[in-house]
Image 1 (cartoon, rainbow, N blue to C red):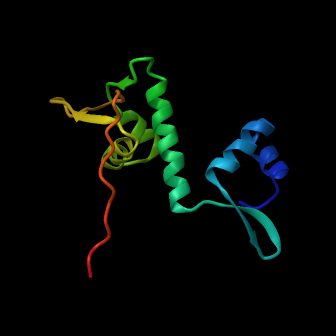
Image 2: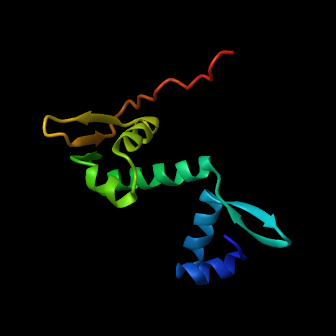
Length: 121
């Protein structure tokens, strides 16, 4: 994304505070060909997806349970398997029901998967 924060805020049509916070959380400042802008790395894209998935869970109420994430995955153009992995990284429990729908819940205590290790050479 090329441009200053003000140019991007105008282009996106978002309030200044929302745009600035989005850029702080999910973008890294970059300078290419003498022009300032913002770049997103794979880690920042994954962070943005996890934030969106957790906000979807929050939108389902205080119980922090979503009966099915399939439609969300379709809307986000995200494989259900990838969404389940992201949810597990965030400490959620994912269960695939008999009907084929995947439900997600967040309960205390949080259980995180063990860290991934690189391949031994």
